[in-house]
Image 1 (cartoon, one colour):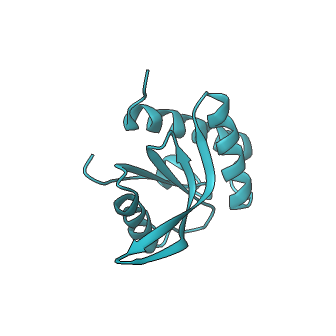
Image 2 (cartoon, helix red, strand yellow):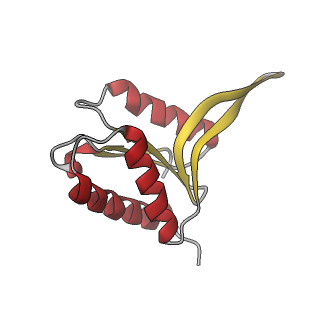
Image 3 (cartoon, one colour):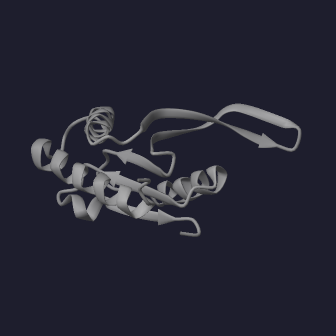
Length: 127
């Protein structure tokens, strides 16, 4: 059975909350990203990490034009952060990634939030 974006999102957020309960605030972004990828794979999800993608502009192809932190089941983009405050540019960045990939759902997870629920943002593109 193929999972919907919302079903995948539910699993991602559950795993992120568990990671945050276990480790709290203070690890490097890469540590959170690697643990999140590992745990999602353990749930049977397909996870690609640090996926570099090309950009086509007319006849020009720019290899490695942007990079997704995590792509889950070819449907959901995850942007992992470990910062004291999210800059609004991150929202715009994820929306751009969604438009370029023609995907519908992106999730920003800032593990340096005291309460992780305050550090999770869903971004949608025609979902």
